[in-house]
Length: 112
Image (cartoon, rainbow, N blue to C red; front, side, top):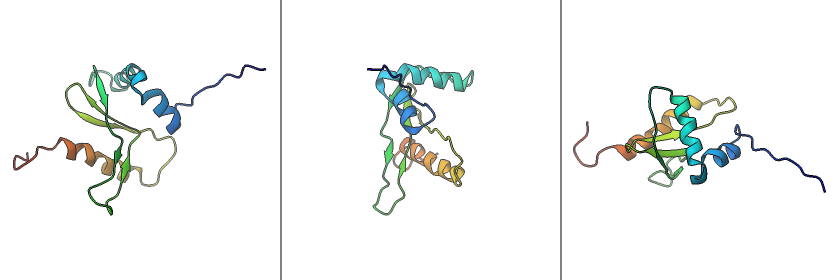
């Protein structure tokens, strides 16, 4: 019987989510994000949120994020890995960004 080594490719959806998308590897994701953000921001802790946004009606466009998190300040953010060129990536990114904005908007008439 041979001992085959196995590796996870972090540049695939499966590998990225396996490495960074589980509570078990939360510290790894926090460290990764802090390295990417540099001195601009510092994440101390985060909570994994539901990555599926199915819209308000059956006809609404759906969005499924790679990772969707909330930091210790209550700020919500999406993490998307893009390894291949997507024709409408910019448009999709703007659409995806509307979901955290909607969830953080104050309820009622107090809109700023």
